[in-house]
Image 1 (cartoon, rainbow, N blue to C red):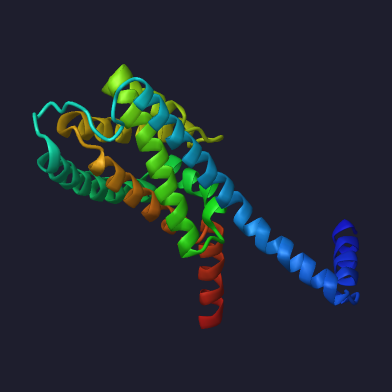
Image 2 (cartoon, rainbow, N blue to C red; image 1 turned 90 degrees about the vertical axis):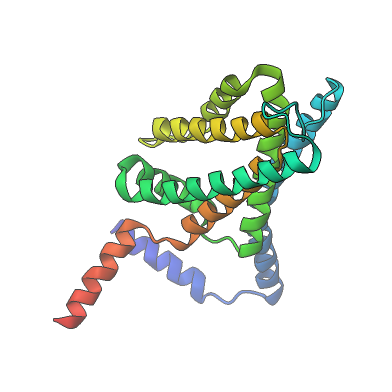
Length: 231
């Protein structure tokens, strides 16, 4: 009875004539609603990156460079960092996709995060990936690694990756491991270029995966429909 009443009310709302001004206003609100959350996310990461840069400069450090373990400098440090960034980024993307196919917590994480990317355009995903990578790398690597070290900065990075449900601890541990890799590349080469590139590529790949992959319930329904059509 409740479902029937709700459907009746929905049908009345759909069939009732709406003024053209109201339709245009609703469409405008819909466009703003689609952009509001990504704009908020991008703004938050820009703020985090700005804070990291200001704090680093205030402490007399450059957030993009540090004294590397390998003793590389300038262009050489940047090239080595980029090379390690490509390797670590590709490896992380491959490992992430493998974990989704193998571990329940990784699939639960996809279900939890999918709504954030489900209806986003390519431009929105690229903007969020770039802003999140820049903000987090400037904060956790550029600012925190010289201040508290590779391990402590990575533990903080992992601890701040929180999601409710069965994916919480798995995602925190995975984020800590990835943070250790990025922090090690920065500390070894002295350049943040590689971690920035790897982080942006990973985020963009994961956001596209979340948007383009279908939930398990939809895959099951599709399989049932295909079997019924063949029978």
